[in-house]
Image (cartoon, rainbow, N blue to C red; front, top):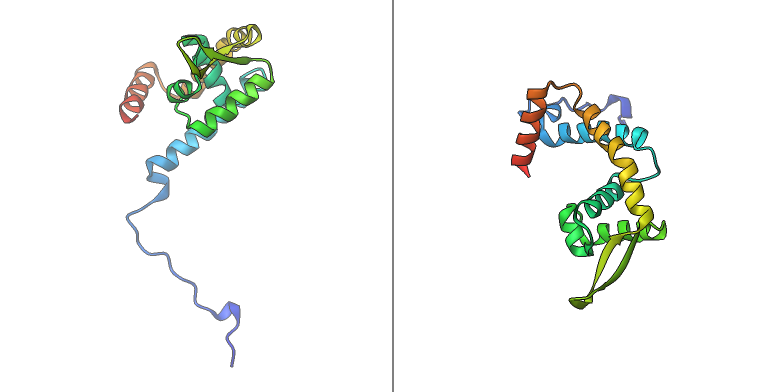
Length: 151
């Protein structure tokens, strides 16, 4: 006689020392999702977090190679290339030959990119404040110090 699907025994969860809700990666992903939601709602323009990272870093440092910008923004080669391609298509960044090394391209902000970076910076600061709002000043400082230690 064939056993029905309902008659199959279900597997009981084992008593495991691994609880997903207690894992740092899972918690960081949830915090990132919350921050990402706040970012999307409040950034004030149609720009992604990775695009903002590139724009704000270029505003901070000035022109640099695409590889260097990737390192400064913690993006791999393929990701930073896609980000710069999209920003360039929007007229926010441009590339030019490095006068010191003709094989290398420098990425820089256009006037429109610089204006957008200046316009959006206050929103970005407010997003950070809202992300950290559940913490008091001492907790915010401690969290940032601990996260920097984990980099």
